[in-house]
Length: 459
Ligand code: ARG
Image (cartoon, rainbow, N blue to C red; front, side):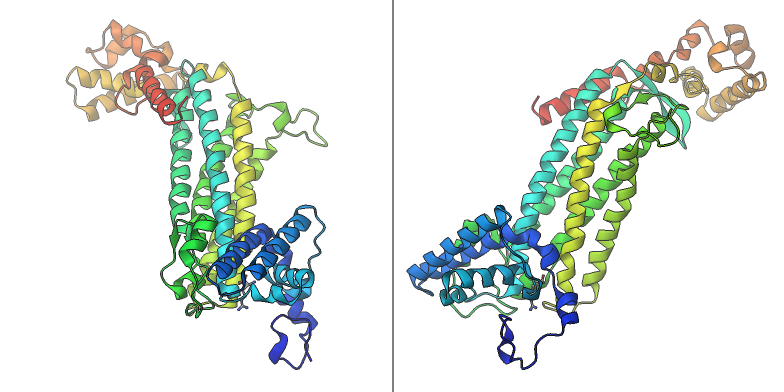
């Protein structure tokens, strides 16, 4: 006769050891413990308020749960694998503590609505934390931009020097990306912020429960309308993982930039010593391991997204045990994302911009477009101007010279429309400031962008 299982009534054989080990989730879903307790307290309070259980029983349950909460917080709670998951561990501990009355807690509730309620509470807390980490990162990028308005650097396309830009413009580009990440998380929050509890196992509950009360106790802004959907949908978690994956992609690109830019070959930036590591064999090395790991862990978060999408794709409605697989990818993504956001922010704060970055804003013919545009302003069709400057570049390349070394006489050989003022276009800051279209890199535009973000971030 099966004794120890809370659901053991109809079983005549005890569970195979293998099954216990294979099906347990407490080893990871104990992460939900405090959210499960919160959900149970609200449920018990509601049961008593509705007269479904006596008031004293409700009070006993809530105070028992509070004791368990303290035991967990103090690390004194003993988790038992044979009790399967976090929910049954806590329920069993409650009954052990307050006696059979603890068994009344599960009235009008199923683990299916209970588990997903705790999961949603966990995600709500973590999304709020992620949003605030993103906002600190945005602030760090804004500060970096404010300090680098007068530095120039090359922009790259195809990783070839393209056109000079202000360094601030570069940092503001990532500020834009991370602000969209923040918006994605805030938007996703709305769909996580819905109460599934009160849906029972799948079809609803046959007690006069008050779901609105539970929602307000737990801080959910809506009650889920359909019990099948409430117990078995995980699209909210997929959406969260997709926001995580996109945010990791953005962080990975920034990491890659910083890894390249800090190399001797580029020498644009220097990473702070405290955020780099040495090599056990090469004494000269200062390695950007934090950035490399963020780039590396991006794959892992993509994996979490694909894992959950795959878990749900063939599931018949409503709850299936497969859904227990929703938690680990999410927990892992939350840890990875929070760590990576902290790492990127520290790198941005500690980054030193080297003067050589400005020197490299010219060279490699990155000012050639501007010479072509000079001719366009004189009425030459763009394609023709492009061709003329192309031949000029070819001429200099064959002599192993830079564009900046050209003289007015030489320019005149290619087009008699070139005058003295064309030589001005060989200065990167002049060229950068000519790009003063909305969103461009001219100082006036960059200052406008900075002002915009100061307004948004309230500094
Ligand atoms: N640990 C389970 C989960 O995470 C709880 C729900 C189990 N429900 C059930 N009917 N076996 O999904």
